Each structure stands twice: as C-alpha cells, then as structure tokens.
Image (cartoon, rainbow, N blue to C red):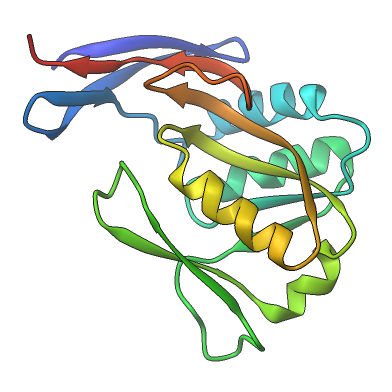
Length: 178
C-alpha cells in the first residue's frame, strides 16, 4: 500500500493513500483512536487560536476529540454540530452539505439549546481536514444564522488546493491518476 508521510505536532505517521473515485486518491487522515496524534494536534492548534475567540464549534465524529483537546488547552468551551437530528433536540438548525470524503449529502444539525452559546460570540471552527470547504461553508452559515461570527478555522490538514482562509498544521495533496 502506498503511503504519504506527515508530521503532526512532532508525531510522525504514514497515511494510507486511498482511492475516492477512479483517478482520484487521498492520503487518508483519521485521528479516531490515535490518542498521540489527537493530543499533539490539539495542543499545536490551541497555540494558534486567536485570543479573541469565545467558543469553539466542531462537526461531530472525527474532529470531536480534537476539539476537546483544543478546548482543554485553551480553556474555551465547545459546541458540537451533529450529523443527525435527535429526538431530544429543541428547534434544531439543519443544513445539508456534500462532503468529498463521503461523496454524498450529509446533514449538519445544531441543537437549538446551543444557539444561545453562539449568539453574539466570536467563534473558531475546529475540524480535522478542510478539503473542498463544503462542511466549513455549511457550519459558517449555521453559525451566522444564529448570530455568531466565525473569526477563525483551525484544522490539522488542508487538502487539495492550498487555502489561506484556515489555520492548519499541514497540507495533504490530492493524488490524480496520470
């Protein structure tokens, strides 16, 4: 299996290169279950967090543990935007997004109970990888709709085109068939 070497906050890993669709492969970054990488990335990102941030927002699952470490390190609370609507949610804010990783539409859901935590606040979005920016755009729309202001985006890696609109620890290229 082909791999791509990365260094995350002083921790080295070989990411497997996997095909997303014919002719397009990515270096697959998955922090879930990798405590050493999650800790190193969270500590490194917390050091880059702008001081004026009031609260962190993260999409659920892969970036959740990362947001927890960033929160612990910087002392800022975080809110999780879920990928499914739960029966206990009150007045949820729902948006659909197309993710390059899944290749199909996904739902993002902010529990209405969390709206008050975001209203009037300066927010940093924390995610594991920003590629096309679909999730990022949908999260930003939800945050702005409820009265928050996104002032920073922190991610372990950008992927594909290099981006200057996020704070990242590294960049992952796309691998195209020649």
